[in-house]
Image (cartoon, rainbow, N blue to C red; front, side):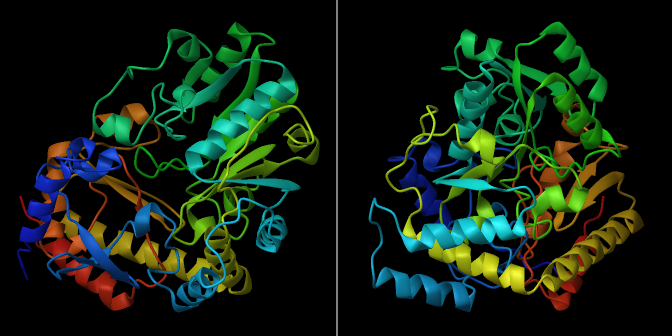
Length: 430
């Protein structure tokens, strides 16, 4: 079964890229530092498949880190983008598309009353925190170790994902004052949250959390954790922010709020709402959102916010998901089947591992009994993960190139693909 893949062109492009781009990449995890070797340079993607610069095909298990929930180059999305390109690519002015997109999001997401479009998940989370501070008049906020909310200064304190991949514990350029206002607690630890609230009475504006963490692998909330977090926020007048950049419209039509039955005050979005194009949004309670300029005094702006291409791609994607909720059931079933098949193969070959799954998010962690927080994720065997990554890559299966990232499945993944992946995993031996 071994079909050793080598992309000679990728190696040349990586050498060339390093002459013009820091580290040769425009986002750190792409550099393959966690797994070693040369990153793959891609030129084409269709359905569940990626094609590199040498024409090698890979089954894609990251879906561009989440947004390609329907698969790459979905014909309806491509057609919609093509039509819009012939009209205009940007106005820097209001459009009907922005209204239609906001209305559709409100229809699908519980408790979403007003929405502001931005251009990335980082912008969305940064703006949500600023809004919470401006609305409450408080400065501090709580985040959870291992949760990643973009690369704005306040969020780079004990963040997961890329920072964990590169073992960066403190980030140059982030001031002590900024770090002072960022309080951190272990994920799934409600007592730690209570302690921070007690230690900082009347000072905490918000709690921001990935309701299902995706930046230390996939780590679901423990039963009752989010419910208790909601109660604490209500009790102490703290704004609860769900970072649904990954989970929004992926776990359900209404995202994690619908799936888990817990309502946030503010929610941030990205990934799926762009249909593959760069976009972000934040929204929620009308009273809080009315504090945003030009209605209120909390300033936020963006020349390309509500870009017509991104709105078109996102609206088309969300419309398909809204009209065909059975897609979520299919994705859940495929993800569970994939998890079970890979787990069976690894078990038969004597590997020690645990696996986390929630909806169409999935992760495997070697040589650790459970992963419910970042501390547990950090002691997994990254050398074994590295070997597994290349074992699968050499057979044309593209996994996340970091042990701290979640798999994201697309509904374009077929049962035949899952069977092939299972067979590839069965040949991973000690």
